[in-house]
Figure 1: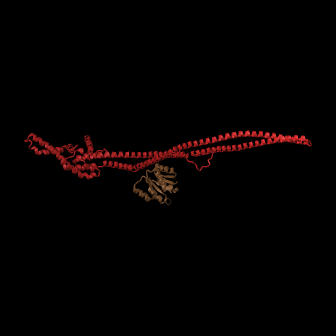
Figure 2: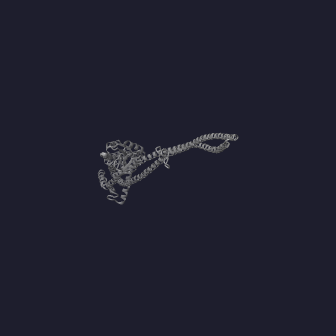
Length: 120
Length: 452
């Protein structure tokens, strides 16, 4: 089972992600914004990072760029979990180094399937 | 209200003058014409005046307004002014328009201020709604988490009743067994008991065989004893004959008599012993017969019990297997319900995410749109207020007065100077009745604004 970091400013969404993944046996750490996420990754290693885009402070794409600049997280899968559906934003995410893109609202089974695919 | 009627109502003097001018060609011949011709001429004059207003005065005013339209377009009123019916532009109109504009601006400023306050209130309400929905959804999420974990635990407990613990070969006494394991163990135990009873029955049968052999041997011994008894009798008779023969022959007669007596005595003793052995054998035979009966009864009972137990066990197993099948079906249904509940929970999770999306949109509205609206309304309010305090109205009015005065040479009355330029303030306040007249004009101007 994987060690996952969920970065999401909305507490309810964090709860939902946490609940879905914990229920499947994964270990989940929560971060409400990019700074908290950076503090988490400085302390622990994660097998997967699930990140929102629209957050106060640094947005999700900036966080992805910062993470990809870190040697330890260069190859760690990062899933974007967002309401954004525009192709240009997706292209930005791809360019920033995101591994996948899940549009909210998500089906828990779909999230678990995607997590299973990206986490080795 | 039609354009002609409005012009007649607003400019009665001009209309009257126009009518008089048009009656001039008819006036010199009026005294020589019959009355009906004069009436026709009068009617035609009225019609000519109306047509003149409709087709000459109105288009002229429209052209003048069209020339002034670019300036108004900056204030966002170009479309209204072009689309709306136009009036002749003179000092009265301008005075009325400025009053109307002033009233409108004052209303605009008030509306902006109130809207700004309303927007601030709406922003607070949005914050409150976001906070409350977030709390509610958080509580819902936690509840769902509890429900699903409990449902899963319930399902696992139920399903464990059916799961065979194959690895647990040696089940310690008192340890927890699943239902199929329990049935299996019970069946094995009963089979062992039945097999034991059948074994006991077989051993009893074997014992009976041995007992039959013993009986045969006892019969043989009995025959041997009969033979021994006859031999003893013959020996006793021979000893008696020998004794009689010895008495008749003399010589060592006494010694021979003693010897035959001794033989006969021994024969009697052997006969007695044979009788005792026979009695003992008969006793043993009787005992063996009793044992045979008891063993036979026990073996039969054991066999019957074993067979009955085996049949009962088979029946019981069938019943228990049926019950187990029912239990399995029920548990499968429970499992299906559990999966349906899980699906419902998933749907609820999806639904709860809509709240998050709504919340994001509300936050966006609160953070950007409402703030922007508030800022715009505030600046609008301030600017409107500033506009109302400027001298622009007076400047426009004075310029218009000067232009109109040079064109018509007409002198303005004092009441034209009573234009309000500020927030309720009146520049060069006239006498009270005139002020009332200005207020009445202002009310009329409010309706005129609707023309733009």
